[in-house]
Amino acid sequence: MANEQRLARFLGWFSLGLGLAQLGATQGLSEMIGIKYGRRSRTALRSVGLREVTAGMGILLQSRPTPWVWSRVAGDIMDLALLGRAFNSGNNNRQRLMAATATATGIALLDLGCSLQLTRGRGKDASTLKENNAMQVRKAVTINKSPEELYTFWHDFQNLPRFMRHLESVEVLGPNRSHWKAKAPAGKTVEWDAEITEDRPNELISWRSVDGADIPNAGTVRFVPAPGDRGTQVRVEMQYDLPGGPVASMVAKLTGEEPEVQVEDDLLVFKQVMELGEVVLSDGTLYTTHPIQRPAQPPADGEAGASA
Image: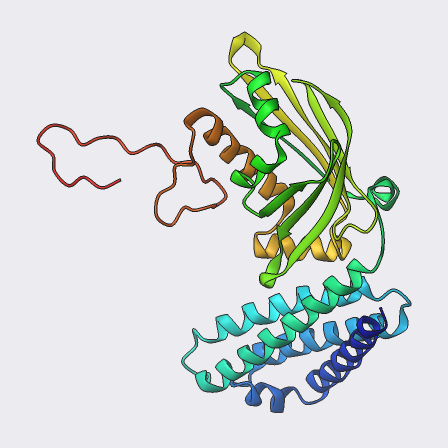
């Protein structure tokens, strides 16, 4: 991890220097990035400067700087949001704002890459999740199918990318072992090996990641008959150690990548796949928070050209 640590230290010094400049030369920096100097811009830049100094000190003084580098990623997202809002004012220099936004985007990608590399070097596995206060997810959905049908479909792990939108592939390595590959922000991917820890046919499947996972995780999916013979309730309980801890969790919320939301979406798509045999989507609704749409109805007699 020597290269990652050197990059982290560079980002620490960069953050410290940038923060001091924002605190000591607020007006000049404001004009350089194309924002008209005033009370609001002064307050915003000084707040950002204080954040940068804090992050820089955290990176440089801590033996494990990973959470502090992730704090820079969260800061980058806020900076890009502030720059985006600045475009709405006619008093600002749009050309300079575009250059500042391009620079901020490049820095954000560098911070994100360093954060992921530092996290991958930790060598943790799912056995450390509880003692490290892992994030918890609990979601459920009722599907009008039998527990046997749902268990059989889910247990064939190569079916999972059909309804888990962030999952690129699952490769079965053996009776209880599989390799998972999923999408991450900024075009990155994360990978891990998982093992089945408990398997009760038509009832539940439990798993955990093994040593070296990019995102240590563990969980259980249960298939419980719904009351009144109304199908099956699929219950997912999951623990995960998101890289960067609470800071990264905040980043995930800001970018719509929060695992809790992803699991809820995936279960709704799973319901569609099992009940309808496909995922029914309309333009602009692909994998949104509530992706389920009603199937298009055929046009009534006498109507022509009705759109879905």
